[in-house]
Image (cartoon, rainbow, N blue to C red):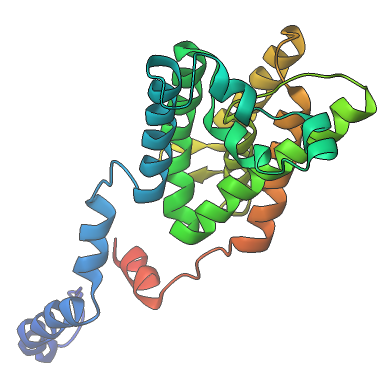
Length: 244
């Protein structure tokens, strides 16, 4: 509260009562709670963490135990294959292929990206919407891979969570776009560079399923456009910004 020198001394009697009112109002309006929440750091989110743990657990069970059969059985039974889906009706492969990885390096690369990007998207979109984005993108990625390999008549088996992860990255790109280029500790430039380098890596490596990556990326953007709504600024946010 500012009382200028050229104002009547009458206002000097009002300084203390008005400052007390403003102090109490700050607590009543929740301004202090807003600042506290901004300073809190949430290191992990629930569903993203569960997905990461599930991928690691399934990898360990598939490669280091015989619970899914002999070594390689889980891969053959759960991998994405257009002819087995089309001819045998094994549609479950669109889901199971998302939890299988060829080796530990493949698993770690995917889970590291998911750990850093997935947490941000889950916090921004919410838990249920995040699940819809992740699994919806993974299924769209599988359909894209299915269709591309069927058209090319390529009898290949495809596994990995990267299609779903590209969907999460695509959702993050859309969320950043409508939030003016930055959200938490991730910038739009970082996401764009990640997408470009990942797609380039896929083109340079014949073993990468680029159709799944591109399908997942587009799917994530579309799902984010449908599901994500930019939060409206609360009155209290405007008040706190005005007084800072």
